[in-house]
Length: 295
Image (tube, rainbow, N blue to C red):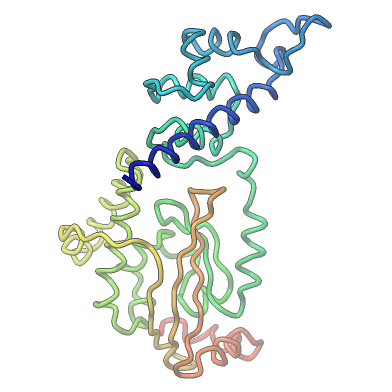
């Protein structure tokens, strides 16, 4: 009984939130923005009227009134999208409307106002120095990386700029990665998990096909169909200048940019890794890294 009451309370709360959210979004859209005459001084309603939203969205006036009142009615993604368009909702607001309407929300989209975040992300990964950090897109294509990612992980312009494919094909990284065979299944399982979040996106299929063509090892692991969420992975790298480096790789998602992820490598206490990374970032370490790059 308590569970049923709790469910009823949550549903009532969601409907109340739906009502307040729709009213607030409707109030901020002017008739002119919706392509309607403003009505002059006679207009008392701030923003759009309910019937105007209904007509512009192509739904019945009574139905929209019931929706805004939070009544228990059937809604579809198609109609919710039409309402979201009329109310000029942002991608985040559209997802919020889906949730309040009791529907599974669509995949996150990049808000146009957040599209230009690259300078801020560049500052973030540079501030992570002397530890390796990079940014990749949804398909694991490299977007940017700091200097530590270059002299520790071997990221450089002349290799394939995709983290998955480079993991299997870059001889420099493989020569440094201790336990590469144990790490590879986790990497592939994480990429398949990323694919499952966007099953209709052909971009993942293109990367997987390219990886198959480049590596029989990837093909064998891909066919296992293992899935593992992106999170933290421990790595041990054998650097030619400083020896073993123990790192913890953490993948962070950016809500405002669901197409990007930040990968930060944090030094672990073993083998005095932090001090070694600091030396590699020093002028002396950088000079030495110019020569034994091949590992």
